[in-house]
Image (cartoon, rainbow, N blue to C red; front, side, top):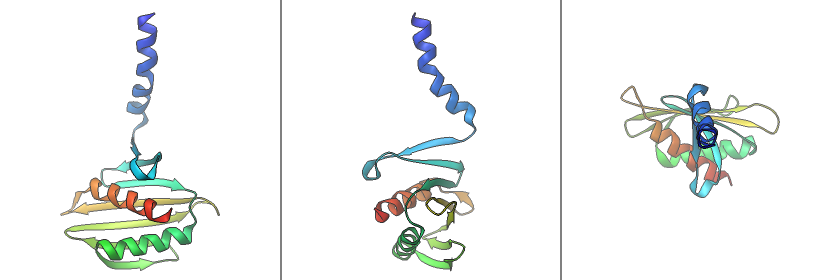
Length: 128
């Protein structure tokens, strides 16, 4: 009986290890929002928030946090500089109701996942 309970509890951990990417649960004021670290410097998530609201919030956040280098609202691309980090934000319309958010951050050519995660949380909080 104890072996069965132990193996049942270990199955989710094994599934996460075998998945190939690390799921992140980003909580706090955002609630149960799931994002995925798809590489060492990139956070990605799908949301049902309207694209235009996300774009406006991303532009505002970019101007508040750093200097905007490139912007293209048609393709949903923002490039900005925050202190020594380069940040790339991409909003992709998957369907008319679903938008994919992808945020990458690199500092001195090294991954800066903490900054990408922070920007993602701030973006989702400002769209609410």
